[in-house]
Each structure stands twice: as structure tokens, then as C-alpha cells.
Image 1: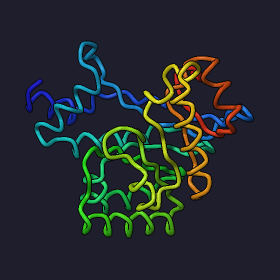
Image 2: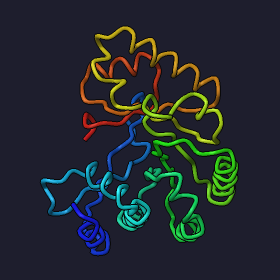
Image 3: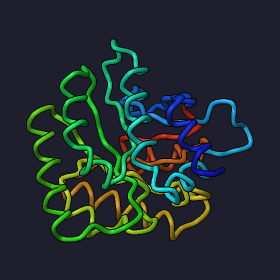
Length: 228
């Protein structure tokens, strides 16, 4: 897909918004929803490939802004749950004033999931934390570190940011019923986050065995196709 095609899709807002539940698995209650964006009428193109193309042509901020706008606009106004929205660090920092204005207008409790795959420098880190704390103080906005276990989503990053939630990469849960090493990794991560006042959200739940393992471990929040 070339740059002009991508710009046209963004300008025409050819996206659907899907809300995937995040479940309190110990009580089977809905805790929140993650906003997921899909291309409309482009069956042969996955959203992952589209996002990569956006990044190639430096259109990621335009796409993310449109997805953010859609997530707020299409979420039911009577939904008394948290709304999780994916955003990169750069979009958050560069469009902070517009984001702040949008949050002033929305009744929703927003949680931003940072999905950046690159490190931020020390100056950006300080600015990032200041802006995160500002939104928390002003609107009760919370933050999540997405895809823990992939790229730069590591323990140091968890401790250096005022993020309430840590979401695991889906690969960590795959075949966890049979892989003892993965079980130990997830158990240690769960305990570490609990000791440091962070909360784990396990992504990728697709089978009963996975859910049973998480319940037995004491995990509170999980997400995946199993709950749809």
C-alpha cells in the first residue's frame, strides 16, 4: 500500500472499532474494554501490516489520532468501565495538548496502552512521566505497558513509569498449561508486580486450561478471544 492510499483511508476514516473485554476472572465481571481498530472493506490487508506501512511513511501519528478519536466517539456513553486505548509514546507527547482537550470532553475512564517498540531518551522519559502524572491528577487517567516480554517492554521500563497496569505479550500464555518454564515466568512476574503496586493483565486467553491456570495463580485481569 502506498502513501497516498494510506492517507486516503485515514482521511475517509475507513476504520471499524471493536471493543474487546478485559475480564475480572475471579468474579467473571467486566473490568474494561480495549479499543481495537480494523480496516473497513480491506479484507486482504491486516491492521498490523497497515500500521507498519503507516510507520514507513511517517503517518502513524495521523492513524493513531483517528483511532483514538474513534475509540472515544464510538464507546457507549453509559459504559461504566475503563476504556483502554493504544498509543505510541511519540503520538502521546507530540499531540498531548489535543489529547488533554479530548479527555476534558469525555465521560470515560481512559487507560492509555503504550505500544512503542523503541526506547525513549532521558529527556523524553522525564517529559513523559510529567504528562502521565498530570493526566492522572486531572482526569484519573491511567496507563498500561503493553506486550511485556516483547521488544523493550522490560522490568526497568515498568519501574521507570507511573503505569498502573502491565499487559503480557500473547506468546507468554501460549501452551502455558504444558510449559513449566512459562508458568514460572508468569508466576514470578505476577508476584513482582503485586509487590510493586502494579497490576498484571494477561492477554491471549483462548482456552479453558489457560484460564484455569490464571485463576489458580490468583491473577485478577485477563483478556482474549475466550471471553468474546
